[in-house]
View 1 (tube, one colour):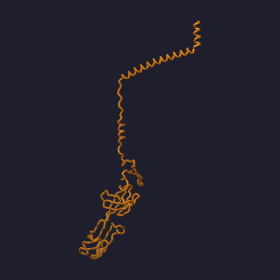
View 2: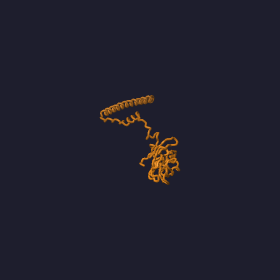
View 3: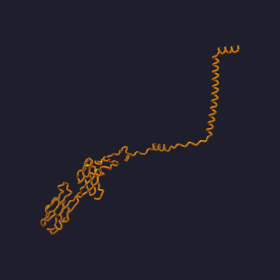
View 4: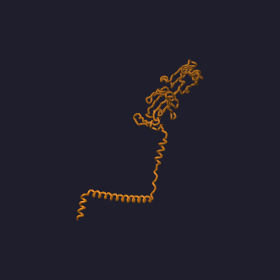
Amino acid sequence: MEFLKKISAVCRLHYEKLLLILVLLGLAGAVLYLIKAKEAEEEMIQTFVKGVEKKSVSQVKPVDLSANDAALTVITNPPPLNLSLPHHLFNPVKWQRRPSPDNSLIKIVTGEEIGWPKMTVTKITPLHFVISLDRVPTPGSFYIGVAHEGAEKPAARRKLSKFATLNSPKNEFFTLKEIKPPPEDPAELILELADGVTKVSIAKDKPYTQVEGYEVELKYTVDGKTFPNLRVNSPLRFLGEDYIVVAITQNEVVVSARSNDKKFTVRQTAAP
């Protein structure tokens, strides 16, 4: 009993040290436990690694980089930039509205959809210079008709009747040079034209005819507008610009812009 009392007294005097000893012992036990747990965990890891190394696995398929390689090739070797038609970066497509009543849109791609490329020749009429024997009032005198269809002034295009006798003073068209018999009903008259060189013959049923020009009618196929009765030097207003007809043949018309003298040719596609 005395022994227990002594121990109790010592514990009361030194309880802090006893608590410190217990704490240290607990810490030492925890350290020993952690060391043992670490060794066990390392052993488990080694066992797992060895098991994984022994397993047979399929190889990873290589990644398909062909698309990336093709894109890289295009980037490193870019194609040349084509700025011509139909590239529309600097050549935007234009649209133009047809005149009423249609009012539809025309897509302008080549420039041939509107303007002079769409002008057509609907009719070309030859203009003649005609000299005819109209009547014989008395033997040796004659009334000779002259039609100058290609004259510039409309008043000069009417048929004129000229009185003529052998070697009478020449008029602005001809001089009568010879009468083939009989005079009262001649078979043929020989005339010398105003140029003083050309000689032609006429009879009652055989007039002298020469093409001296043409008259044309044009049609703009986009809106159907027609331009009739055009001759050389005729004015023409088309798409807001003034033109003049400079030449007409039996199958084409040439016009010139008054602003810059640029010429355009319209050909007859069908046979006249």
